[in-house]
Length: 191
Length: 191
Image (cartoon, rainbow over all chains, first blue to last red; front, side, top):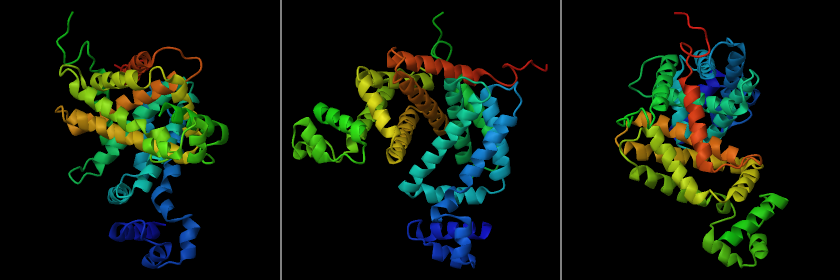
């Protein structure tokens, strides 16, 4: 699967996603089209196939997590664990994947829709831990915001820290943003 | 435009979005197809046309907002103002719109992509106020999470409070979720 994915990413980058055929991907990888279809339903799946594995991993980590952690920490810890397993060490590949997706509105829509599905799955895993539905949805949305922001930062050329560290960093920034309020924030307090 | 929209929403609900034609919408509204196309590029625009107006409204409110407010309050205040103008008093219509969108994966993807565009526009408006890009993106993401959660709650049959009040409520919940940490949250502290 690694060879096929590498070949597909190269071709998508060179000539665009739309213009690349499965035949070309297989040829570049030195494999048959049949082998391609043993691994992927279509060329789009080369970009999105790992999504459901990532989702399973995150949900499993949430379920396994200590009952004593607050919900947002549960989500971020689960995302960090899944990131360690699935993304860390594959920075170049993930970066290239975003370049391909960012260049194609149809792929962007699919990416957003996969993210929405993951947000829903995280919320369901939180509800299964006894968290009320609205808190579950807010927490899951906040966790995904941390994940997305951290992954995007991680793919920047100037960035070299591990993804899990960036998630901790971004979580801290989100907490800071949320903690500033009109009453006690940058405004001189009236009381 | 109100008559065309009402007719379109009725037909989408009755027979599904896909099976409804512009000719039927115009007929139901007692207007010509030409009138339809004076207002909307296609039948999808009946559902999404207001999005860009909402976005302009939010961005204008952010720009007009007092410099002294913390960023997340700026975003939520701007969303509340835009909600007052564009959604409040149209609960039935907004509810029906979500029912139509939720029943159709293609419309869901479009909705997500409009939301992503709005998130980007809010982040840009924050950057224009001198906020650093990452804080701008996090704040905009958090604000949109508040907006989406509040609007969904507002369209529940059991809910009767004004939308702006629900935004304040959800913002408070998000702040609570973000404030609970492993060190000082529900866990007995180790120190």
